[in-house]
Length: 80
Image (cartoon, rainbow, N blue to C red; front, side, top):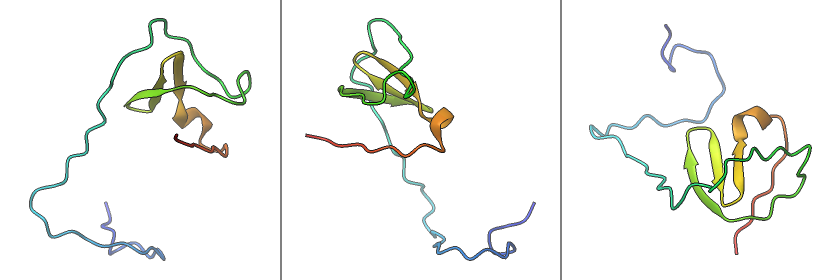
């Protein structure tokens, strides 16, 4: 396996010298009462409250969306 330095990629990156990695937490405020999959094909606009992130899933109060499945889509998120 090659390291980043061995790969001939035109990337702007910085290597951290920190011994302790930064841990990022995404607390889940609540789970949807009924798990319903929200698909952009059926719901092109989702206006809901984001209650958490679990792996590749965005949890909303009315359902969940597997965001990895829509990697090629353009998404616009806004907050109030």
